[in-house]
Amino acid sequence: MSILKITDVVSGYGKAIVLDGLSLEVEEGKCHAVLGPNGSGKSTLLKTITGTLKPYKGEIYFKDSKITGMNTFKISRMGISLSPEGRRLFPDLTVKQNLEIATMFTQDKEKESKLEFVFNIFPRLKDRINQKAGTMSGGEQQMVAIARAIMIDPEILLLDEPSMGLAHIIKEQIFEGINKIKETGKTILIVEQDATMVMPISDSISILEHGRIKWSGNVSELENNDSLRNSYLGL
Amino acid sequence: MFANFLINGAINSSIYALIALGFSLTFGVAGIVNLYHGAYYMVAAYLVYFFITSGIPSFISVVLSLLIVMVLGAFLMKYPILYLQKKGESIYILIFTLGSAYFTQYLFKLLFGASYYSIPSFYDKSTKILGEVIPGSRLFAFIVSVITIILVLLFINKTKFGKQILATSQDKYAAELVGVNTSMIFVVTMSLAALLSGIAGIVISPFLSISPNMWLTTLLKAFSIVILGGLGSIPGSIIAAFFMGYLESFVSLVWTSSMTEVVFLVIVFIFLIFRPTGIMGKKTI
Ligand SMILES: Nc1ncnc2c1ncn2[C@@H]1O[C@H](COP(=O)(O)OP(=O)(O)O)[C@@H](O)[C@H]1O
Ligand SMILES: [Mg+2]
View (spheres, rainbow over the protein chains, first blue to last red):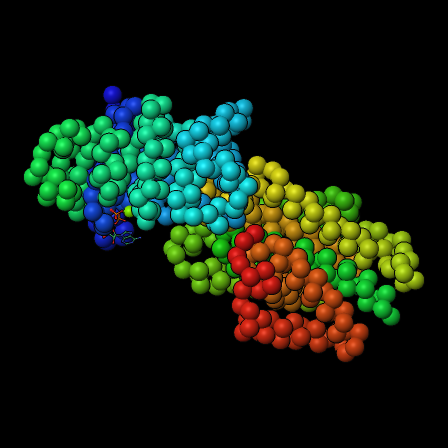
């Protein structure tokens, strides 16, 4: 059953159309990856799902409700959380405060167990609990951003290029954490440029180019299709 | 002489801190330079004067006046300012808030004339501190300002609501992503700023005069303090308020009190040239 369904969405910035009739479905409990080069509209897609951008056309459904055009905070409270491009932590708050602020609209009693959960995913954060988020390295900030999105206890987790600007060894730690989240059965929609990191953790993949989905299918299909990998992913 | 300087400096400073706190909060949280801030101070003072002279007990007059300015602040943010902010030009907000302040000034001139008023003191027992006799009304203003500032700081740092204000001030987009209704936080912040400015306007009314242009000097002082403290920084504003408060006492001690505003502006210019980020050096509430 699909938990998120996007149909014929047209979205962008003022007169600049970026997503041009995009449709996508994400199955419950699965990890779906959208691969695309720089500027193909990956972040625009996630901003449109989370209500920062209102689509000009098309609809977005989350479970049984239409969320097209809803406010970002409402979409978040419904159970869709985003680890955004640029991480966007609260720089003067500590790691712990950054994480706790995300539990503001969920049940208080679960706060401790959720903290345990994210420390299990990114053990490094446990030692940094009282450090100000703005003073951390890029990789650590990315971990906090993902952890903060998890603290909301979402039904679907959206990840915007978690590998961006990070050294290979840090990317591996981040994706190891994402894989642990996936293993708990959480639905994930991840947008990425780095196909080698994303393919091992994904169930299905879409290829995005110029605001349109060029191809969708299972990871194994993509692995066995050399021409597709060549033309879109350069692998 | 020195005791007088010390005590009056503290009283002035605490009132300035109270006024600047709201101005700074509005900027730090909503990114808005609210030129109506001094008008809340004036509106509250006139309302208390009006209610008290209409025979309403002073406590009820104060509560009513503060409620009205809070609603006024919430209304201004919720409708015109948020609308203008969506249009994306901060200059519209500057013009709107300045225009509204002038409108309020002319309205009160029309209703109350150009005369100066004042209200009876809320506490008139004078006290002797360090050999200086301090009028009860001034002591009252000091105590109310200090308590209010402490309560606001506790509210921001300890309550769930305050944490949403803090999050919004640091990154509005990220706050929305974790579920904070930032438009509502803007409205609450403006209402709180109006309350603080209103409290200041009321506690000074027994010893300073109520007049239709009292908003402008107040606004200029709040603005100077907030620039000096670092736009949007609460600790910076409080430190700067004490600096300016004592500077004012000092200028009136060695020169004349009518020069204080000039000295304020000179200091602000010096800061704008040499340290535009203010005392605290960065933007954070
Ligand atoms: N705030 C913006 N205003 C105008 N155009 C934008 C904005 N953000 C992105 N774009 C444009 O939209 C297109 C897609 O951008 P984006 O979704 O960020 O791509 P990706 O995340 O895949 O790198 C690009 O051409 C980019 O220049
Ligand atoms: Mg992007």
